[in-house]
Image 1: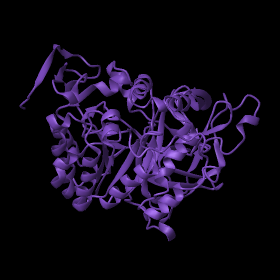
Image 2 (image 1 turned 120 degrees about the horizontal axis):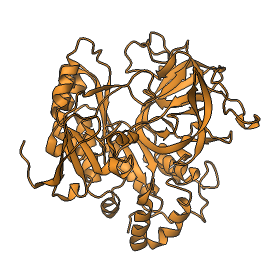
Image 3 (image 1 turned 90 degrees about the vertical axis):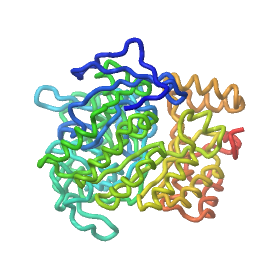
Image 4 (image 1 turned 180 degrees about the vertical axis):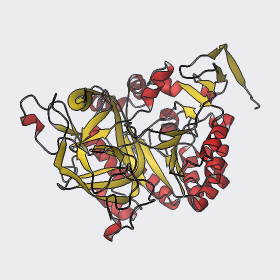
Length: 519
C-alpha cells in the first residue's frame, strides 16, 4: 500500500502478547494522528464469537482496530437499579469507578455473592428492548445484554429470526420459537430479586446464588427506537441489576492483555489487524456460519481516523454482503459515506443500520471539545445521505455540557436538523470527565469560560460523572423530543416548565444561564 507523510519509529517493531509475529509500529505526521501509535499485526481470526459462558455485551463482532479514540459499549437503561455493597440501590447511570457493589464468584462448585468494585463505566446508543418479569419488574436493555439463568448466561434476544410473530402492541411472549441461548418464557433469572438486602444481617456476602420465584421471564418488547444504554466493568465481571445478575463490559480491559493500559493507551495505542478482510471472508464461507447479526463499532469505532489510510472496511462490508450476514455500525465519522454503495447493498440485501454522534453545532465548542474529529454538520449530512439512501440512521447527542451546549435552543436545533435529515432516533449523554481529562477540561474552562469553573467543580467534585439529577436533566433535553421527533412546540413546552415542578432538576437559582453559543 502507498503511504504519504508517514514515519516509522526508531523502535520499528514491538512484540505484543498473543501475536506470533512482531508488530510494525507506525506513526503519521499529520495533526489528526499526533501522539498516536499504530501497531500493524496479522490476526488469526476476524469474526469474534463470544463463548456462551462469557459475560460480554455482544455475540458476534468484527474489530479491525483494537483500541479507539472515542470508544464505548452498551448494556442497560440509565435508571436500572444496581445493588450496592451497603444493600441500597443506585441507577446504573449514576455509578462510577470506585463504587462498591455486589457481584458473584464461583467458590468451589457454588456461585456466591461478594462485594466488588466498579472499574470503569460507559454509555452508548442502541436499539432497546423491555424485559418484563413475573413480579412486574421491567428492565430496558440492548438485544445483546446477558442475564444469568438456571441454564447459563442468555442474551435478551437475537436479530428477530426464529421469534414468534409479534402480538398486540408489537410484543411477543419471551422465547416463543426463540433460538437457544436467548431468554425464553421458561427461563428463571438468578439473583436476589426485590428483597431488602439492607435489612439482612451481614447482607448477602457469602450466600449461595439461587433463583427467585419473582424472576420468571414473561415478555420481551422491542421499544422501536434507540436509547442511551450503560455498561460497566467490575472486579467480578458481573453485577446485580433490578434484582437479577447481569454480565459486564470487557472492551477497554482487553488492552491489558497487550501490556497496555485500558485508559489512555486504549485511545492512543491502536492495534491494526491488517489482514482482517481476507480472514473474515474465509470464516464467513464456512458451512458452520449461521449468518447471525454482526455489530461493528460496539467495541471500537471502525471508522476512526486511520481507516482512511488502511481502508479495511470496504472489503469487510463486501464479505458480510456476499455471505448474506445482517450487520450494523456505530461511529462518529462520516467517513462511512465513502462506502455508501456497499452500505446500500447491505441494507437492501441483508439489513443494515447506522448511528452517528452529534454533540453540538457550535463551531468553537466543537473545536475546543472534540479536536481532530469530523465537523458535526458533516455528520448530520451523513445522516441525511444515509437515510436518503434507505439506510436507517439515528444520532447520539454527546457529550452535553452544562452551561455550554445544553440549552434547549441548541439541542432543539440539532434535533430539528436531525429530523430534516430523516434520523430514525436520538438520545443524549452528559459530559464525563475521567482521569486526567478533568484537569485538562477545567484548565480550558479557566481560560475560555471562567464563569463556569465553580459549577463544574461542584458537579464533578465526587468523580467523573455529574450528579444523577443533572444527568437526568440532560437526558430529558433529548428524551422530551422523543423518537421519532415531535413538533417543536411540544419540545419547547416540555423544557419551559418550572424546574421545581416535575422531574428532579436544578432550581432556577442554581441553574447556569443557558447560552445559545459557547462564547
